Image 1 (cartoon, one colour):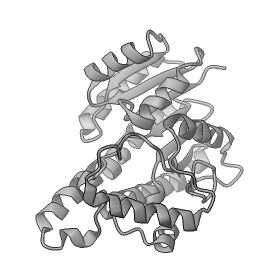
Image 2 (cartoon, one colour; image 1 turned 90 degrees about the vertical axis):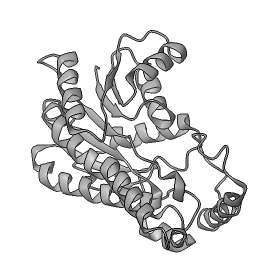
Image 3 (tube, helix red, strand yellow; image 1 turned 60 degrees about the vertical axis):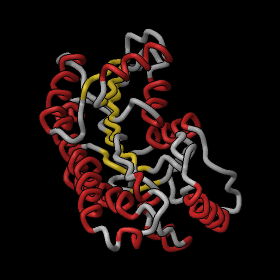
Length: 274
């Protein structure tokens, strides 16, 4: 069976693992959107070799015109008969400056709050609204009709309150806003057979914590202790490979009939975030 995937943010991390796994099936057509097409083409050639079913297309989440062009190019790749079975909104702006500090860190830095909030919301929220609007006609042409936004467990209020997660406030807020946008699209289009939902990939080791500064070690240790309280079976981050395998299982089984429209779930398909 031939399946068409369009995935944003595939130059590294979970996004690259997504195109790696999904393009292993030669019947799949996999289209990856990136800001840096040249660099990603080189990485694909070096690490994945020649895969005729894998296409890298330039698509900048901060530019409506770039995404519009990416949609047009995707349509050209697919031809008139095919639609997009899975649209996976993976691209995101990570707010590194607040990764291991609480919101109080910016008490006397209002311009930094304005700058970081604008950038994270432009990419993580507004960019995905444009993505959904522009690619929806292609999704509606398919029989599968699934749109998945890759969110974060950091956007779950219960988890934040249960283990007192103080850092990453701006990033988490943008992901919570994304979840609401997804729910609104779900409400709008479920009667047309389109399934929208948000999913956390789990706590994934993408190398983001490899070179954290010493002052961040304490915050990271506190977070790990909180996770052990929340999930006593927690044994550390999972790999991108494990994350993608879990998510594939969830999105394959998800359907409008099982009440999944507009939901925010983990990589296990429930509210167990690690």
